[in-house]
Amino acid sequence: MNKYKTVSESQTVMTELMIPAYANFGGKIHGGIILSLMDKVAYACAAKHAETYCVTASVDTVDFRASVEVGEIISLLASVNYVGNSSLVIGIKVLSENVRTREVKHTNSSYFSMVALNEETHKPTQVPGLILEHEVEIQRFITAMHRKELNRYYKQEGARIKTAFKDEDFLEVLKKEKCKIKTF
Image 1: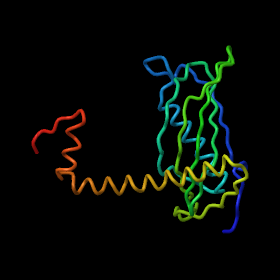
Image 2: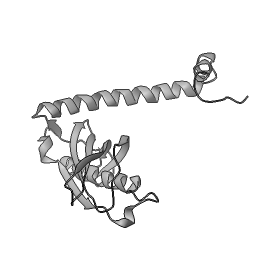
Image 3: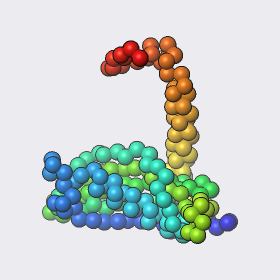
Image 4: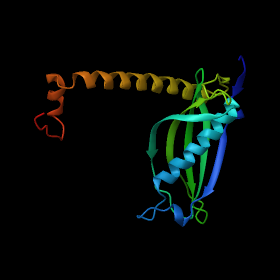
């Protein structure tokens, strides 16, 4: 596949009214509702770019910047930030609007890693490349590449710690933290 697509071809906006059924015990919109909507918009954006079924592989940080109130309208803006062979990183920004005051606030940001699947074999399938037309798109692509490298490092470091966690160096680091170690 030598096909390429622009970022704008798959950009997706989803808008929804926040109703009382979405509220938590504190009267704010439950974070799980926001996450579910983010997953839906990530899928829509990825599927539009890949032109096939996509699944969520991972979610790389979800920043909760401000609470969302019942009665506000949220807009979820999704863009393809990066593509690999069969994977896509979808950047999502959530904005909340109070319809009476017209106040708009940035409530959430996240990055969803999606994998395109062949609809018949259910195996990963190649996605179109990405045409970067604006400086911000280039910045997002490079940032996603770095985040991917860091995640690979964290996985490797986690595996190393699992095998060597009794090492005195690790135990010494823990003495500076707010924890106690019972004998094991």
